[in-house]
Image (cartoon, rainbow over all chains, first blue to last red; front, side, top):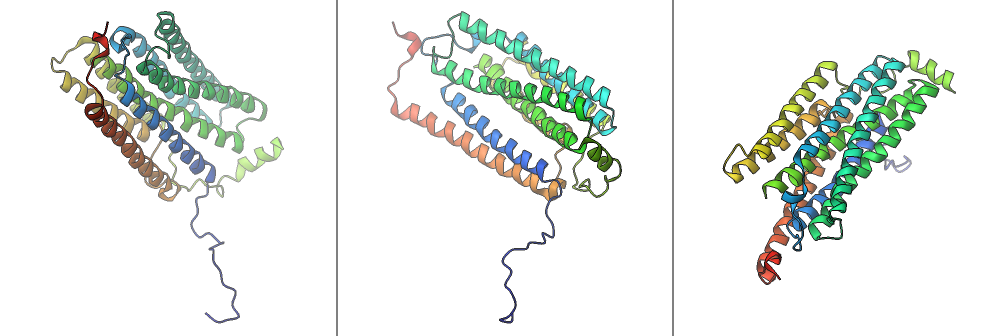
Length: 202
Length: 129
């Protein structure tokens, strides 16, 4: 290199950088969220057996209710998929309809979960009862909070789509929410397997 | 603003990052994922609720195996994971996360199990007065 030439430290031209930075960025957020849930799962794994002479999973968990809950979330996943397919075809009305159905399934999931929490607390098995119940309410409650924010986001996007149509920005937002929603379903697979099913088997 | 965006959306599609290798799925792929998920959810619930297998450890192993398969099914059919999207960076991030999650989970359980076994006085709280 000759002395007069300016030295370039960075490759500013960016020969091969991803075109769609938002999606990758959102994926990275989901992965960090994954770590949050991993830590909560680890906490439940460590404390899940400490009942402090209180009720255990066998007395508390009602598997039929959990099965209904799981199917609600699974249905909401497929209906969101249909919304994405309609979005790709540029159909505003049917996109909105499928988004609405997804929101209703999400709401049903939340209601059943709140009913379950209410039932447990009513029986005196609140998060203060034992380390098992503290970790249970933290893990499942965090997932429930995610679903709550997902529904708020969903309603926001439905208003956006109603006002501005399926513009490029709204499509990008819907794709981000799609990843978020399916990610929550993936986390729920871990919850119903490790908390509910293995809890009852314990 | 909205009219502009509409116009841009109309014909400016080609030059706007649809060659990032991202797969958006089809009706068939979503339905495949859904049917597989229903089967992979129903069998573990059925196994645990009816107690179809006598041996508890086998039931646990099968239930966990079904969960792992279902997570992969969701990743492929709903989240459209593949090795080419965003030049492989999504997959890189996923693999990194899986490594960290495995270390955090197995490490915590391993350390805390041995802490309980070796350090705590042995007593069962349920038998206390």
